[in-house]
Length: 388
Image (cartoon, rainbow, N blue to C red; front, side):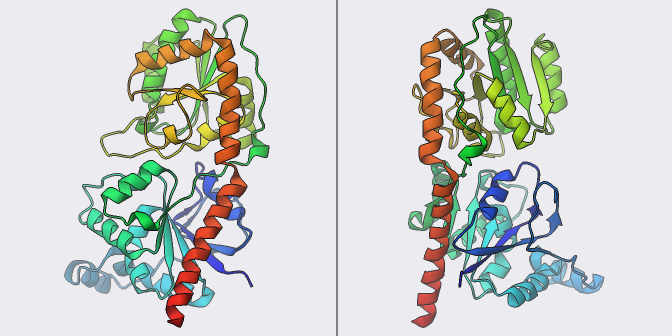
């Protein structure tokens, strides 16, 4: 009989969480059911065994007492603790996998009291500082001490957790798994007329370095006036970025394509020549892991021009499968674009190496095997402790 894992995700699933869906639906050696508070995009992310948490009903006075007098954590005074406790008793999983670190902090009172083990995966935004949330870092440190294993998408995230006193011996690297069949390698030819097509696919948020990318492209377009730049994705910075495009006089050459599904994204990558992703660390320390879209683009045969940020250097080796520059340096980013466009032979070599890198290090079966291995490690450790 397979072990049962409860996969907890507050939102199942936001549009940009395809990597979580791939992971959960690819498990083979364990069975899983999903626990969620908010069901989203059910047509895009169908899942048969899902527990949608009911909104807890707590007496207003009792809730006020727990919150303001007893100083109980939000999980308790909102009534979620009891709802979760009953669900876990009914489903009786062997392990709970919590996505993400901030959710693990929210669930800390339950994790402390539950008699089964939990693992929490950290993906990047959940290691940022939360100075406005009183006691958050102390609770995060407590969570890291309590968990038997911690899963991270990149070594850079692991380093941040070690700074928070997480035991390095309990950290397991669990990278994003890329289904290679969905992004097959495609041989491209350099455009003879200089009509290079650049692409960036991401949420339109500060850490993605989109303004830097646009300024670099503005310089690139002066030498390659037939070039174009497609930005795929949605987010709060869209209007600001559109205004920057007008300011840079790039309206003819830059397209905001909005959110694209996997089929549309694959076609976009197949028509492009270079993937741009100059991530940067914003003031709130919202760090990038290893970007999913970047790996998908590399799998299809796109060399990358990016920054030495977060987990990017763990996938992009400067001068081998892409070029890396310092954060926020649009001039060096433009120079790297020039280097590729003016050396088509090198561009072709990097394209091939980009695809090889993803196949060797980020292929989905290998990452699922690593995840299931972590599950079994924790479950066996817990069972041994019960027998002892």
